[in-house]
Image (cartoon, rainbow, N blue to C red; front, side, top):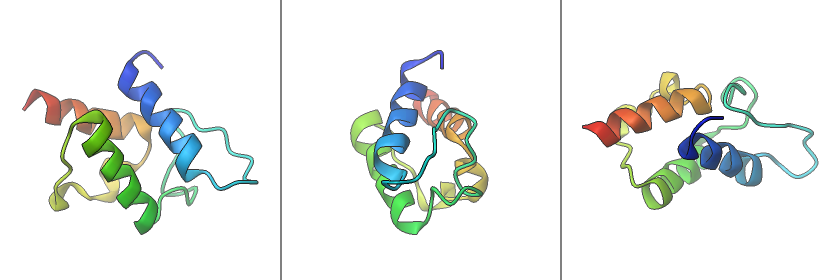
Length: 84
């Protein structure tokens, strides 16, 4: 994990989306949808975190599963939004 956004996102997912008792260690390539870490409620929490803590607004059009495959994919989307 080379940058702050990646670290913050991995930490957020690990601390807020992994259920207590699940033995999951999240990194930037952990499949979030396939693993069941993201459902509609958790996606809303993640989008809220991105808006409040990272400072990017995720539009409804961006709520495509392809944009939320893993932390690395989300970071790519965030960087594109930041540079727009």
